[in-house]
Each structure stands twice: as C-alpha cells, then as structure tokens.
Image (cartoon, helix red, strand yellow):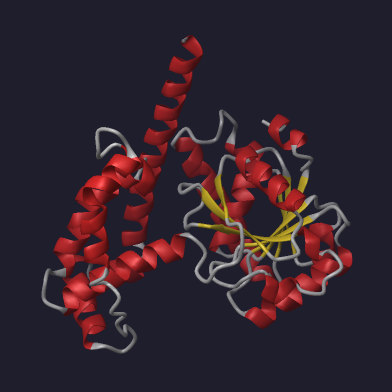
Length: 332
C-alpha cells in the first residue's frame, strides 16, 4: 500500500481541522499508508473525529474500498492532537480544513509557514477562496496550493488543484502525483478563477434550473429528474466533451458543425442572472423539496445517509469497472 506514497515522498501528513472534510482526508491518507496527524484546538472535536473516522473506515472496508486492509490497521495510522507543532513536525504534506473564513485561513497558513519544513506542501481545502488571498508573503508561498475536494471525498474522488501566481510548477506536479497516489482524481487549473471549475459548472446548471422554475417552464421535481435520470447517468462516467464526442459520427468538430449554432442560440437566452437569496423562488423550491424530503429527514441525517449509500454503491461499481477494463487491457 505504501509504495505509491514512497514514490511521491510522503510518509507523514498533517490534517488541520477535524470536521467532516478533515476526517475524510485523514481516512484517505491513512488508507494509502501514511502516518496522519489530525489537529484541532478542541479536544471534544477530536474525540468526535476519532469515532467518526472509525465509522468511515469501516464503511470503506464493508464496500471493499480499503485495498484489502484491516480497519484496525488503517485507523491505527491516525493520531489526534491539539498541538499544531506536533501535527506538522514531520509532515511532508499538510491539508488545511478550517472553516471558509479568510482571516482564519491567513492565520493558520502564517502559523504553518513558521514551523513546516522547506519541502512540505501546504494545501488548502477551500472551495471558493483564491490561494493568493492567504499565501502572499509567506516564506514557503511557492509550496502553497488549493486542493479542493468534493463532499464526501472518500466516495467522490475529484480534487481541484489551484495554484497561486507564485506556486511552483513542481508543487503543482507533486501535489497531483500525491492525489493520484491516494486514489483521487486531480484536475489542474492553470490560474485562479472565481469558483474554480466545479462550482462554475455547478452554478451554471443551478442558475438555469432556477430560471426554468421561476419562469414557470418546469417544476423543481421534473428538473431534478431530468438530471438524475438523464444527464447525470452519462455524467457519472463521462464529461461534457467526452459526451459530445460520441454524439456525432465524426466527433467534436462534426458535432459543432451540426449543432453549434443551435447551442449558441439557446445560450444567448441564458444571460439573465437571477437573484436567489431571500426570493419567492427560494421559498417555493424549499417547500417543494419538503414534499419530497421531510424536514425531519433533512435534520436527522437519514437523507444524507441515503445519499452516501448511493454514492458508495456507485464508487464500488466504478472501481470494479475500472479493474475489469484494466484486466482486459493487460490481457490484450
């Protein structure tokens, strides 16, 4: 298990913050054979994290996603500490997972900058804050990068890698190799952009869905069905460019020659950005969702548990499909 991590030079990992995302990162690095040190300022939070990690590792084991390892062996690689120095003393890689507050991230990265080694990568899990806003002027700013996961990371492997203007290309390359080594699927942004990749794509779809509801074109339920029983099925294993490459006999160029003008015409109607916060549409969509998912199921975690079970089943399916395709390729 550790061979891939040895190849990328990572034996010890510091995880800063013991919330949901921090716990997932700790699990992923421990599964890959690393010694993981999880830091939080609250002992109670660390105790909760320890219990939660054991549950997550057990789930991975039960879904045959632990690479043949025992639960106890993986859990034993994770230590919990309220000392930041202890968490990163031997770290080759640090993953910050504190709340999305710029001042807090600036403070944490400044503290880390004073105590990590000159070769340690400092990665942030932020989903929306450009790395230049909290790494400028640090001694090790060239080693800083965003590595943004999608929740839950142990079932959804994509990770957005966003460099600051001063991040070394070697840092980007090494971070990509590290993410691949722990089983994730890194995507690299060549420069900072508001929303990164995933949220820009997600928000574009959400805004169009919002317009369709607000303009009385379709119900929230039917729009959800159009994605979950339509587009989403292809998107679970193909991206938009891979999709259109198969939707015309001769690939992308042929597709655009056939449908490009139609697509552009529709998109010209989609420039009307709507307000969302505090609107009647927000209240309407919320009430429609409560018909489908009672508030109790939203609050007690049962809906989230349903989602994660479905994601786990999909992850298992994709894992088995990848193994079968690899075996077929090797046989040929």
